[in-house]
Length: 231
Image (cartoon, rainbow, N blue to C red; front, side, top):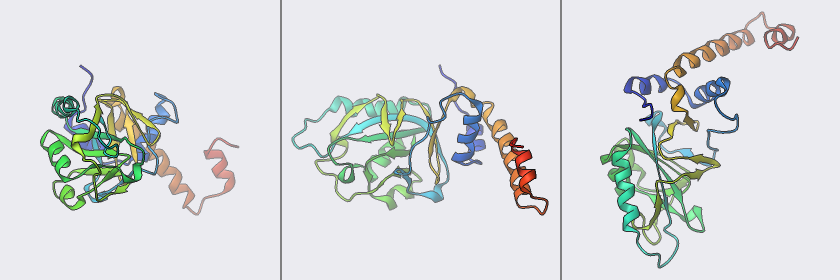
């Protein structure tokens, strides 16, 4: 069984921001510098809920293709995957169909269903709705925006689950550990989770010292070049 994050580690990481964690991972050299994060087209719908951390449960939903057959087996496997996932789970839902701007993939009923099975939030490149109802249960939503109508249907038009999905240029595999906040969405390699908080603190202290120098009366270009190793 792969390493799992503990509740204590979750609370530790929630003290930091996605840029702090991302910069720390970059400095550890455990993956490509251009991997592990989504773009600005996926935004945090509920910043007041704070950071979201969880394991990805992936799916694809297409509610814009008329006369599509219902794939009950896909629906069943999706629900079973949430239930079986390490907790907390995060739903990562790809919008299928021909027009993402009109694709509604998640609303109040689906959020309550996922929440009851152990998920704490959603990441999607499609639309969402019922924000007040979803916020009331403390369920996170990260999406491009809201859409009022679900076309040919929502849950009944799930066409795939349990496979990698590409959201905003980032490939997400089932089980990936995700950190998301009001700034953005990143993945965290689970193998570094034990050492990550200490590494973040090291980077935080280094940057805090540099920031203090930049704002001090002692600041000079010569001093900056020296501290930056550019002299």
